[in-house]
Amino acid sequence: MVDTQAKKKPVYARPLSLLTLGHAVVDLSPGALPVLLPLLKSLFGLTYAQVGIIVMAQNITSSVIQPLFGYLSDRLPTPWLVPLGILFSGVGMALTGHATSFPLLLVIVMLTGFGVAAFHPQGSKGAHFVSTPERRGQDMAIFSVGGQFGFSLGTIAMALLITLPGGITNTTYFGPPAIITAALLWLNMAQLSHRTPPVQAAAHKRQATRGPLPYLLLTILLTYILFRSTIAAGLSTYIPLYYVDHLKGSPAYAGYLLSIYTMTGVLGTFVGGILSDRLGRKTVIILSLAITWPLIALFPYTTGLTTLALVGTIGFTLVASSSPTLVLAQEMMPGYEAMAAGLTTGFSIGLGGVGATVLGVVADSFGINSVFLALAVLPVGTIITGFFLPGKWFRREIPSAQ
Image (cartoon, rainbow, N blue to C red):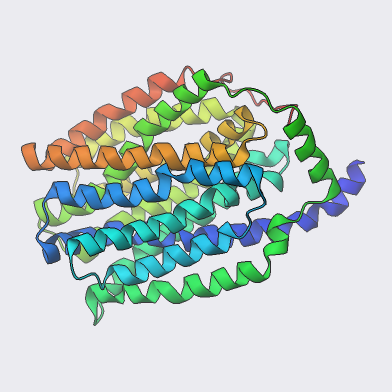
């Protein structure tokens, strides 16, 4: 039995690679948008609250509706959502720099978000199925790293593109990678939906034993994610605005600063997934925010290289909890893997966009420095809710039902 599974292991490598590539390309657009915010604010004469509305529109359409796609994916074969989501995401970002009004900009941003929402539940479900319980944290981290890398690359690419001739209209260059990748995944869609007999048997077993959802534990987990996603959305939105508007720095350098934040998040995602396989999901989830808390409080008081180092460390520690959180939710909801992904990487993160809008009102009323004061308080909520999550400290637990 063990030898047979070992021989079949390479079969799973290709689907995971395809899904990771797709995850990277679909998340180019969310990574690029924060870099554009200072330019869009100036171009359309927006207030901080209106900038927050852009973030909220993107996050709600890309995240809050994800559970609906997850519900669909858990009941019907929907591998086509993977290439379709990539196409919508890339084409939407390509059109963003060509918007002629604020309402049209919001429509384009929502189109981009719709593509992101379509991809993630089905993509996460596929990554879950091609992994084993012993390596689930690591394999999901690999899939998540694809998204973090794409997000980071989108930030770097946009920071560079806005300095070239064409400026903000260079968003056009986000279209071709999305079209090519969507075509590649469409041609290989059988790899994304194919399951070998052992995987089919496991899936049927999960469906047969599917029980009531643990609503109390899910509420605790989603509350944790709400706090964490508000912190993440707040940092990615207001770090560049703080540097450009408050410190009078260049938009390009602000983009590079944000790139450091996202790039270290890539490493944090991978390390967090590996550690969760060894130390337990709960341990990594709590320690991640416990370390991030004092670092955010220090941010407004740093300059130069200290700021760069601090931003990079915050990106690493904050994002380290992302893949353990997703895997924990899927292990709590056997038979509802896509919905679990939609809830943890979608719905609550979309509510983080609402949090970013609230932070925009705070910035308009009390100054942008007050945003970082609020962000320094929020980790307390994540740490408190994290203690009520299932699992034990520094103990690896492998669900027998999966």
